[in-house]
Length: 50
Image (cartoon, helix red, strand yellow):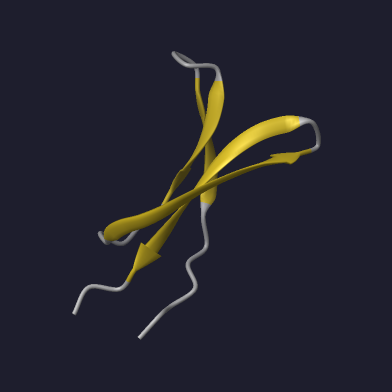
């Protein structure tokens, strides 16, 4: 079963990028990146663990 997660953008000062955080532990299956108000961000897509 796939589930939609809400992600919080966190600024990674060391690397100068925004990253996402998910409160539930899950297997990372895909990465996507995009831009929001001129800021590059990275979104991780998760699969729910069986």
